[in-house]
Image (cartoon, rainbow, N blue to C red; front, side, top):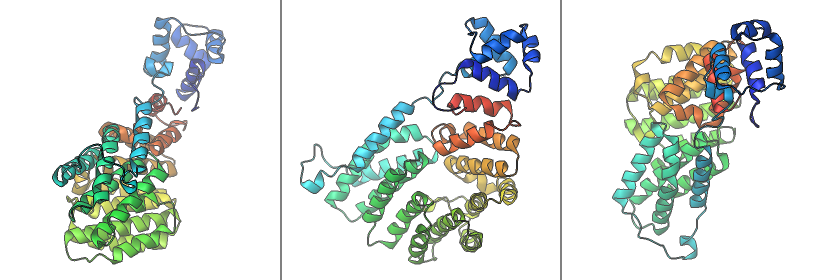
Length: 391
């Protein structure tokens, strides 16, 4: 029921059936006739009186705005598209390569580093609309800095800027543009194994659907020693990415081997850290096991691991974005076990802690729609789906 706005009569009919109300029982609660209900649902009779619309919404247990189909797209969708277009334009700019003059001075390395840190914090707090606004300017600034190549220390900032850009674009399902940002990060990191590993983490996210990306992750991991927590976090994160790629390919044996190796590193690093923006630790690896189990279709294992992991102390220390993204994986796991009630519960929890994770991610919106279409799903998820315009 996506695409064009759904007529109010069809919304009434859908929600009535979801409430397991017959036309007659629905009519009785409204003080109307069964014929009146039938005509409304078929679009023969319109709902015009505000008082009647309120009564219908009350019986169906939804907000009037949801019944009317208002805000069927998340607020700011048009602005997001314009923002992504500006990010695309910034990533596609090659003024320096052709010797075109700059219209302003290059930002200092210290200021650029602060702006990049702020961008990462914005991402980890799941403030995606705000990050969409920030990135066009940031990408332009780092592009100029990279083109000038004025200072050795500047490369790390450039890599981090392209990494955070790729991470956001993956969230927004802008695959080709995310690949461009990740590729820029890899190019800027050339010659530095640590920076290459950092960039490869985002490359793994972008190329997760490609089985060919697995060896790239492993090759990058092999270049990183396992001496410091920072190094172990990078190496472990790359192993996690390789495992998730193997999971997408259905190779559960390789998934297990890679995640076991990552878990050994995570045990040494511990929870509560965010080395190289990876949030790597035992809890992160356990959440990766949930995601991998979902990918191979093992819903029961995914659910069991999810319910255990969210009780760990490390769960509360993860970035909001990481937790909310995991809850979407958990919803998929509950769907695989025919448990729409719990799938709805974790989606609503994700929406409470990080609204943008649900409202702005196409993949999350698809999961909401899938749960809401289940006849046994609770009314709260139906209301969310209608508000998102996916039902």
